[in-house]
Image 1 (tube, helix red, strand yellow):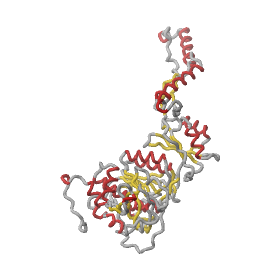
Image 2: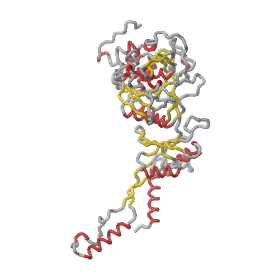
Image 3: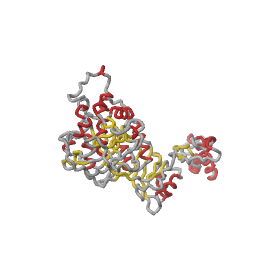
Image 4: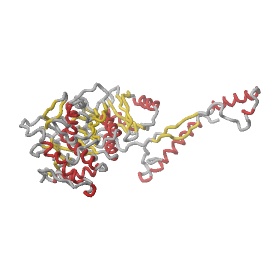
Length: 488
């Protein structure tokens, strides 16, 4: 019989041997120098006991004894007791957790996060007992959790019940072998509306459509049945201009639902089909509520909505919000991009002197700024080499709650025009990749600013019609396209 000390020694040796065989283990440190330390790896074991009555003695054939034989019954009883006293049998390692590279500790001057919360990523196979033990070790209160379908892991949001700082706690969590990654619950805000110019609006119902050449594009495609997700505030799905547009909805906040003007306006830019005409009136929308009426959303709510949208089959995702660099969001955006999802985001309304804002600055995202009726980028719009495309975003006539309309401005409303045009391209060529779509939009757009603003293209006004022509199937497979009457 193994003693308890011998058992613990066996477990330690087995764990050490498994760790040495994994990337980053002690046996892989040669190129990293003699003092390189292996990253912690958590190894979880199944522990079982032999079932009572199933252990047979090699010297005896117990079950061939006569049933009435008292000695046989006594022998079987002894075997039961012996099997019960045997130490647990280790089946082997079940899960090996690989740490994320880098750290989730926020930069020293970064303050855009919830001060008493932290989010961590763990293996989706961890038991509730291990998760509870993790909470006790770090004195945390669990708020909510959801599975990362894009990453194959689990994300958990925790409350910090005392006055410990978020950066210090993240360092502590990153040293825990059960934690894959830890970071703040960053706060994002909508690209809120700047004041309108006050000028008379020229043909408000057609100004943006004409500038983007959408009437001509709609002769080729209307986005029929292409799924476009809108991650935003609550959308008024009963608005008469949006009748029959929605294919599903998801509330990542889990609180009292409120219809909001921002989400409703963004949805209308894509799918309106009444007095106003959206960029893709035939598309189907997935409404994701990740922002409150105050215009704030977090890492946790945005990623939950993003995962849901991808699971529903969204081909395009519009993100009219801005915030700080976020490692967890970046990983999920990369995973969505790799699945063929086209990601479109507003550049932001903080002006030329603003720091770079995300998710627009993410390399997997198409960043969109705004222009006015004179093709001028407004003073409120962000600048940067990552911003390659522009669409109308000044003095637009937009949908509003209670079946009404309003005039507003912002890069928030330029981005969904591009998202809608992407839906037209996908309807025409469903096999297009995200990068092929980005390239087509950039190469067919009309240049607005000097090429110095972007190393390759410069900022360009999207041309929906030319973008569709550039990706249409071979002429041998469809009838010849005749340009619209006013087409140059």
